[in-house]
Image 1 (cartoon, one colour):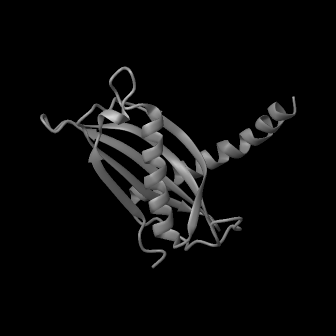
Image 2 (image 1 turned 60 degrees about the vertical axis):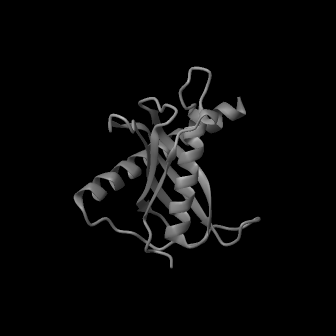
Length: 161
């Protein structure tokens, strides 16, 4: 049922196939995990097929090592007419010491479509923050949206040059 699931959490172990030549999980793998959790959260909220529209403010803050317990959390922080802004974090925990660290963080925007192939944007259930933490996250999403809009003319000019 749409409009009820605004959070998703994935958990798994970082595997040898996830790492780069330096022995740490490579950024592309972390981005794949962000996209998967974001997609699951967006579909859970909208009840529709969704596509990634943008990724903003991505930060790689700490390494993820083989054997770390990886937790990927996606949480709805703003809705538009057909779009959903999600805060998505990747946390890594050393199972021996219990130390957990924020490894990667970003805000992703997904758009709900009426059908998977050639679909058009479709309405999503509105969401209004209630808790102070959610209000702050929504304000952050709105600021990122403003910055993105301000950059559009620059991107267009670069393409035309």
